[in-house]
Structure formats: C-alpha cells, structure tokens
Length: 118
Length: 144
Image (cartoon, rainbow over all chains, first blue to last red; front, side, top):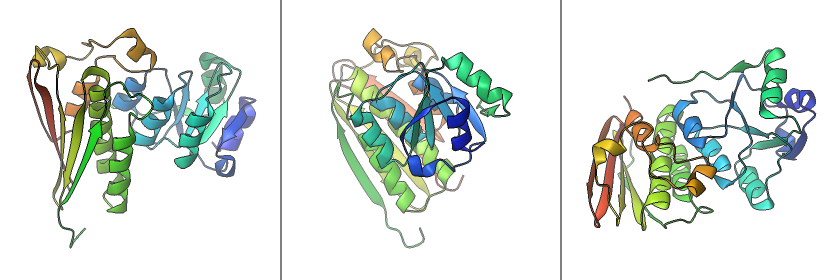
C-alpha cells in the first residue's frame, strides 16, 4: 500500500515527508510502547501510535521505520518534526483512534507486521 | 570493508536528558551505514546501543557508550557511573523494571531493555557494583 493511500484512507494530514508519499509499505505495527517496537518489529513497517515525543522518532530511526501515523488527532511539535525530516520520515496525523485506524488499513489489505517471537 | 582498520567510537551520555537521548545511537548507526555493513546487522547494533543509551539516561547518573568496529565484529560497551544494579539476574528478567511513571509515559520502562539487548547480541555480559558502575558488553558479528 502506498503512503498516499494510507493518508487518503485515514483522512490524515501530512506533517513531514510530503515528497515520499509514493513509498510503498507492506505491513503495519501499532502500539504506544516503544520498548515493544524495539523488541518485536522485524520488517520495515508503518508505525501507528499515540505516543508523541522525540523517542518515537528515535525508535523509528533505529528500526528503519520510514513512516509514522499519529492517532487521536495528536500533532508533534516542531522539534520532533525536524528530527523526522532529518531522517526522511513521512509523518501523518489522523483524527481516528488507534483501533479504528488499524481497522481501516487492515480491511483494505495492509497486514500486520511480522514479529520476532522468543 | 576490506582495507578497513579498526574504528573506535565513544559517546558521553547524560542522565535524564530525554531530548538528546538517542543521539549517540543515531550517530553510531550512520557510521555503520557509511561503512556499508549489512542492514540486518546495523539494526541489531542500533537496538543494542539505543536500549543501552536509554538505560543510561533513565537509570544512571551518567555514562558512556563505546563501539569498536573491525572487519569481523562490532563490540559495544555501555558503562555508567552508578548507582549500580543490586541483582543483575533480576534485572535481566522480562518485565522487571524500576523505571518511574515519567519514563513509562515516554514509552519505556517495561522491563524489556536488557533482555532485548541480550537477544540481539551474539555474546552478552553484564556486571555491576553498587554505588560504582554498571557495565554491559555486547558482541555482534559482522558476518554471522
């Protein structure tokens, strides 16, 4: 699924990475616990989260995550967006809650991320 | 990689500086990318350094991260100046954490950092002395 389609489906606003909306993503992972992103995510996924701070971007950077959707209408501040831009990330924000956002994307064929089981 | 001599990186990590937390790991990751190291190996190193860096920021009074890179392996050492861990075995248990509510609000403190570091290391050691230091050593092979 192209990020432009994610944006469309979620009625999302784009906050960073306007030029990278053609990027194709193959899976998604959703949570507010960055420890879990670091422990479980295996492939380059789309991250959906309601957690807005520098560590969200840093965690994504470490895990090669190229796009983040902030849910519940949350908008990161300029410092966070600057860091996202430095890392060529696409940042979207949607008014939907996490559950609804995931449901919409999943119903349109975007599968959940492969995770590493211990 | 062929003619590369060993590279040594060192970063000072300050306590409770959450806006800068991750800068060392970011810098290490960029260096490894420039060296053309396999992206799966880079990701393992990134997880280890970032978890270790967050641990220093969250739990210690300050410390440093050192990374030694050669053609065969990447050695990561994270050393802080205390307060030390009373029971390192307990600290290695998934879900055990002494992190504050503030840290949990940042998306950390779930008691998964140290086990995650171990999981991503080919060799892992931890040692600590109360009021002195905690040291972790992680070894990751470049061509596993």
